[in-house]
Image (cartoon, rainbow, N blue to C red; front, top):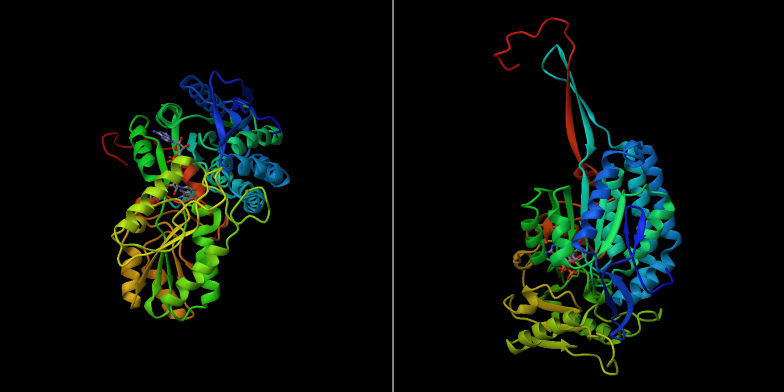
Length: 491
Ligand code: NAD
């Protein structure tokens, strides 16, 4: 992991790439490492290796218990190597070391959780309505999985795919994003060290139009697990028209955070900051739409402004840093354009809206709050994937709910109130896969995660995730010794 020349991991080997590209350190804007660009031939090799491992050899013969032990070992290795992996993620994506270390150590728990579940996913004995039959249902691995992830929190986003897929007995080709792939390519060394048989897990990186397209449309792929943006998701779905792979999609969001006047406002303000400025706002669950009760709006925005302006922006490797750079320059350019458009259309800039002073190198952008009168502004409607919060006042619970649900997305949401009944009503009414009440940005391997509407399809995490990587086989056994009766009548 000390080298700055990374390689793809295919069929149990680190292979020399035919072509490479530079990876940029977002805190300096300069290249720092060389990444392998997987070609279509590399993708084919990886998928074929995964298919072979699925059908024959040590992985195919392994008991669920043995697979579980391998996953637990991998989880231990991830936790033990969290420091090194965190530094690579920090360097390659600009995410602050303060968070990457803690988050990656916790990723170990995802592998341990699915390792523990591997031999607890049982089939069924059907109490069949025919006296001379016995029917059992066997859960079998669905097949070769193509896992495609974006650059943010990629070890975590991979664990929620690899964990249940491998527990179920599938084999995987994981494609890291072309932006910031270093930690996943280094993670491949831990897969090898854990002792997974060749072909069970293959880890590559490359570009979407060739490598990603070939992987998700490959005829030997039976399952696609994708995390990324909605426009890429549409291309992925089109790709799977080729192989009809069962597909789950974890997409973006425009998550509302509703703050009522009766909330603990200190705590709510911290949660709003966590929701939109942690990870520089580059989080699918970013709480990017603040809805605040009108009677406390001015006070609450003043608190947020003070907190936003006190955020320590800087070098992601400094443990004192609270907000690092954006991951790419194109990401910052898009945010700048949407903020400018929103302010020109009547949004009131409460704070930020510019590159921070004294940070000429790197893709830094100041924590930004824009007050809006309604939800028409671009900064209220579009996912920015950056540190930009829109704020709108509401007068009633019904209005808060209507505003919260006025979006095609539905990934996460936050509700801040001291009224238990109101919290329950809001949790019931909000159209989102996650509702956090008096908290924000909490995750666990035990809890299902996924979106409504444009935020995605399917759920990751929790017990049911394994089911999504299996298909059931119904086995009918006739227990009668009598000859089969009338062959022209279905039984
Ligand atoms: P992206 O959609 O641009 O890329 C994601 C992955 O898809 C990359 O690996 C990319 O190479 C690949 N890809 C691109 N085109 C492809 C194609 N035609 N065929 C196959 N693969 C292709 O996403 P991004 O900009 O890297 O990440 C940001 C997005 O991810 C945001 O919208 C964010 O909300 C979302 N996200 C969602 C979650 C979640 O769990 N819901 C988590 C993190 C990020």
